[in-house]
Amino acid sequence: MLEEARQKLQDSPSTMELKIDIRGIPSDKSAIINFIHDDSVDTTYLLKYFESARPGSGVNIFKIKEPKKGFNNIKIINLTNDVTYSFVIVPIILSKIQNMSDKVNVTPSGRINTDI
Image 1: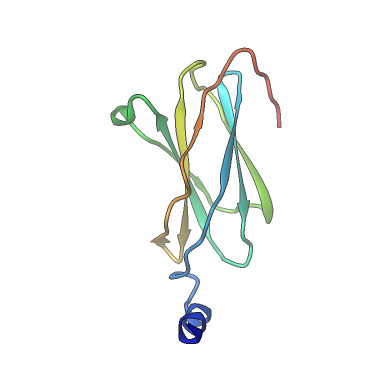
Image 2: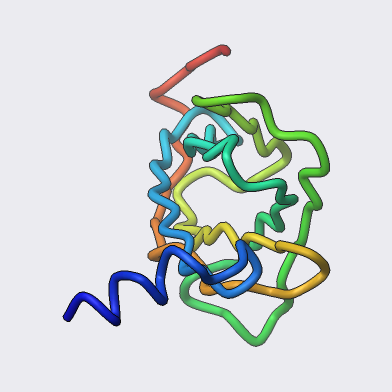
């Protein structure tokens, strides 16, 4: 057990498992995606999303090159109200794709208007 703990400490950031928690907030024809950036790791992120009921219709991808230390907000616009979208965050460390976050589903609605 001590050997396993020592090995984890010696692992480079590129092999460490980075746990990213995300949250989605619906708004009118948009969604706000929140996540916390661990500033101890130099990383960029990919935000991927697609229509949950039609994953084969295409995946949209945004690259987040310089995340803020701590709490980050990303507003995705031009979504269709009453359609559910699935979002994931994928960290990239030293040009290597890491494990993606859990998926969060968001359904924009005309009854909700949230600005950041």
